[in-house]
Length: 433
Image 1 (cartoon, one colour):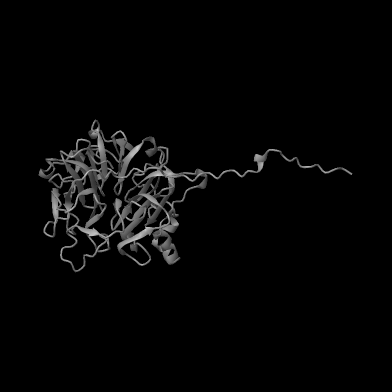
Image 2 (tube, helix red, strand yellow):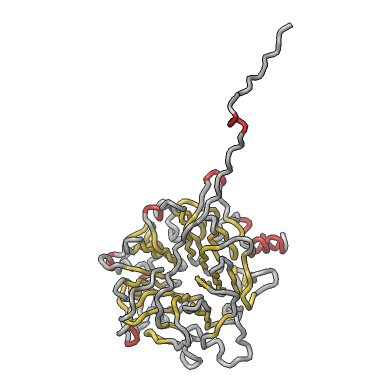
């Protein structure tokens, strides 16, 4: 009879020690707008629904005008037809269109309440604000996020929850700590303390990064009922291949797209509308899943800002790049330029240290370290602040009496209006977005 081979038993005591679990990625720091400089809020453009905050008698401005506020402002954000301001004490003030709750406060029955700044009641100190076409969001210092207003798609109002519009702040995402937020026209992006990216809102152009093209239309939702709609309105993680093992340390949102920077890398993953190559991808189609943008991954970005069909990006060296649709001069590449299907440097700004850039729907802005404000693109409603309604095909210095003794350090542009934050010349330093 053949003896059975006995299994060798190792004498090494460590053989049966379970392997230590891999430590969960933790995001140590995130680039948020600096809040150490206080400034005067200036506005220009259309004000027919109160988005200028200059009272009911001022429906348009072609040059920057100062908004009278009783508090010190450190950040500003222009929504589609409303404006959001953040005070040095971490309080939020809004003015503009409130038809769908974007102001987050009661205006009904109060005369001219939409045309003047009013405070939004929030349960803590706010460290970042964002705004879309019909919504506003606020990040508190403890990592909670409150939002109000609504999302819209091509078929109309989606609501912000299954209850419809949210006219007052509610905690939109729970059980995770958020480090940064970004708003597109009708979606919100959240960056968690573990480097994860969550999204919610309209999915039609792929901007959520977690739906299929077929499952993104209102018609598809109607056949499934409220369950599918709830998934779109509830913040959930983007759809990444587990094998990639990616974590992110920065996010930006365009009107209809999203940019995510990989932690400890220059790689940028994008998803959303790319019909004019504004995401830096080679096929002019919507992208519904996160895709590496080789063009955007060539640079180390400070800020990425997009309008409807173009993107303006600022690298850490202060250089400005443009990509996308040329119409109205929004790229700033000069008369006779073509649509840009890859990032092109804005030569007019070369040699100037730029510290902030921003896009409206068809406008672009840049702020220099010296405090000069440059604008270009569509000027139809005076949103460039040049004093005229002409389009500008190259970056143009914005001058006005209100800016003579001030240095601009931040700018934000909405649908047809622009908001500027400028400090007096004696102020120390500049804001840094």
